Image (tube, rainbow, N blue to C red; front, top):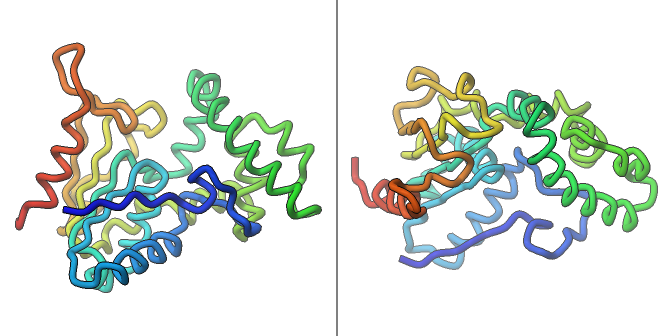
Length: 235
């Protein structure tokens, strides 16, 4: 089995040259990537895995495409997807998450946004971006501005993949740990909220894209093994 790792443009170590950024709802980018890979390997069956932000974008594309997604992918999997961006955004901007995760994430995102502002003068509010301390502020100042959303709330609502899960036709595995630090277990979907093509797995532990095996010191082999098991299944 051949493997391809695709990054959103601007997320590979090289800045995106256009006045845009990668974001959680970029389903058009997902389709572009899949069509490119399929064009290189037209006779191969493609199995798509999305992780974290990319997992939400993949699920959004699968839901929007529904039956037509079969022309590109045979099966798919989403790992630690932020299915409800409003819940995730609010969680990241509070308490421990804000002090640890958000501060670290924003440091990288703000650096990229400020470089973008230098390349496109007048496009973004440089002073406001530099002063931003929450994801809500950043998404309002940058993500919404670059991608045509009204504000952070509009962005979070429109790109969340959870409402689209009922339309997914390709067999899809969705793995979310109930103890993930910024995806509240209370908003995880139930089987009644998704299509029959979907397999939901919500282990009690696993964090965000970790899923270590016990006992200590453990390893991180469970996730890749589970993905390969799902892709090899005919059920």
